[in-house]
Amino acid sequence: MEFDPALRYRRLPVVALVGRPNVGKSTLFNRLLHRRRAITGPTPGVTRDPVESSVFIAGKPVRLIDTGGFKLDRDTPGDGGSPAAPAGKVLDSLVVERTMEIIEEADLIVLLLEAGELTAEDEEFINLLRPRWKTLIAAVNKTEGGRLEGEAWNLLSYGFEKLILISAEHGDRVLDLEEAIVSRLDFSAVELDPGEPEKRPVALALLGKPNTGKSTLSNRLTASAASIVSEIPGTTRDVVEGAFRYKNRDFRVLDTAGIRRKSKVTENIEYYSVNRAVKTLEEADMVFLLIDALEGLTEQDKKIAALACDRGRGIILVLNKWDIMPRIKNALTAAKDKIHYFFGQMTYAPIVPISAADGTGVETLLETACRMYNQLCSRTDTAVLNRALARWIEEYPPPQGPRTRFKIKYAVQVSANPVQFVFFVSRPAAVTEAYRSYLCNRIRQDLGYSMVPVKLELRPSRKAE
Image 1 (cartoon, rainbow, N blue to C red):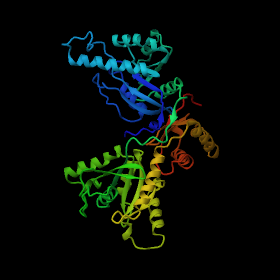
Image 2 (image 1 turned 135 degrees about the horizontal axis):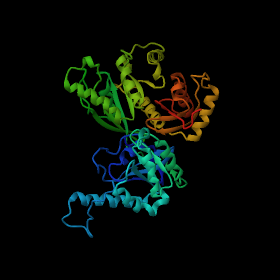
Image 3 (image 1 turned 60 degrees about the horizontal axis):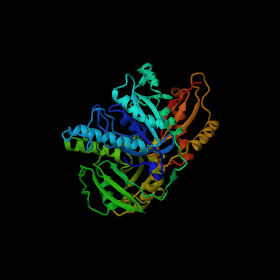
Image 4 (image 1 turned 30 degrees about the vertical axis):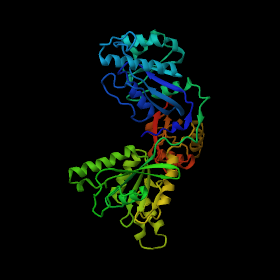
């Protein structure tokens, strides 16, 4: 997904990740973004053009840039460069030139080194960076589990004030690096720009069993006939895309193949269609899970919702074909109660009855989607979160038994869309599922995430009890 909540801010401080090829810059870039954006691989020089994104680091918005690797063996194009120089070497020189330009523009430079003996490229690069020494943080990568820590500390001999030993791939001590980055930046010029237009459409995935009306709803939303509509289950095989605009907001619709049980999937083409439908979750913001109102919630619907929830996607349970339901008093209340009874862990997900065929309820569905998207993209200030946490702990203290005792030190929100929080705990293993659920429910109730999945990660605090 390409949407960054930090794009709502202007005048962000610039943080550049620099270092020689294959030291792990792109892996660290993806780690800080909490998603895969930069291409990574074992071949040196995968990254050429700078890759940048606005991102929250330790709760603060910054502009993060992943640069190409610094190489010694290169030819300079133009002045001093050989006309017959290999194209690869000339390209390497252009990469380095662009990297040096970014370094000059950056407010903070994160120099990534690798544990072990420095290469000639590392040493030349360090010398080039000495004029920017006051705006540099040195991080030593690939030290997971204490690997090569002794050799890593020897790098202090190059004059670094301090070193932060991390593992970009495994996440070891990346939080320490995030806090160091934030502590060295000036955020006084940062401004919220509420009037800035959205950078991309909101992506809606239409999922559900075959013949629940996904294509009919897609065609109604997009005012088109892009999706073939038929009573034959499995008519849609590819993901059919469409677009529409509602109340000054652009939407992108992904109409997927109906997801059937594995035992019902017999054709190879249908197998791949189902896989593609599931993969659509990776690019969706929200899911409209279409349920046949006459049939009600099925086990297959629950599995689809679980897949979406695991990925932190907003989910609206859409009871389609409501127009042909028997006219019984309190029918909707009864339908909602039945869904909540069989699917207790999804009580936060809105339930909206519609008729895709005649359009009844579709506007309510879109209004619900707009409110949900705002919640998905919302962020809670760390100070506000921890004041609320203190109140939650006071109202429902953790157990105090010798084996069940734990202390929650503090919490941070590490991402929006998906909404994810990290709680730092003295003994994470002692936290019961019941207490974890309590924290998730309080986040939803008190912090404005009532309609969306909340991911909660427990990490050990630096100092145990």
